[in-house]
Image (cartoon, rainbow, N blue to C red):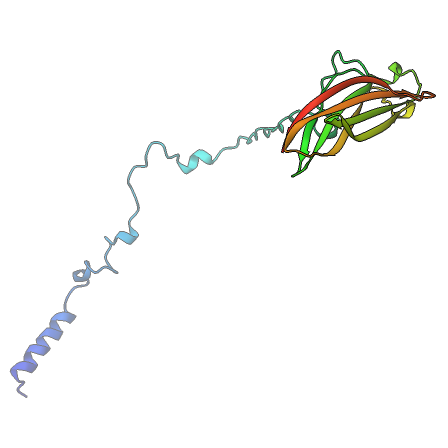
Length: 205
């Protein structure tokens, strides 16, 4: 049987493939022996990278003691609030002219006056005789307020100074002026108080 030229060429191509030796596919990616996937890394390691054998040792590991952290010491806090009256008692005598009056508040037609009066240094300095401590406020010679405090053994501090804060709410006629505060002592059995001292304070609304 006679084959066409096209069939003859195809038959020759098939025969040539079957006769090709296996090593002809050595460059194939999957079958080649030079594939990068199967290669080992023979490059030298950097000098600062330890080899795995360096960790194989029979020596016991020594664990350092934990570091003890001490908390910061608490800071000292100065006493505030009710424990501090803001008054200097050095050299001050009881019932003396120690501090003057001050204006602590004012409205459209009134002021509030306050003045501390020391009546005992401590419990041992009080003679035990009760009396009345009297405070009076005057405007232009006219009395417009009075406050009385009874001083006795029960009102005297045993370890520290005892202070009475005389305080007045005082209506005033003008927008400015001067007010007088008189402090007196009325002893038990007496009918007339004894004037201790007089102080004045200016105001402006």
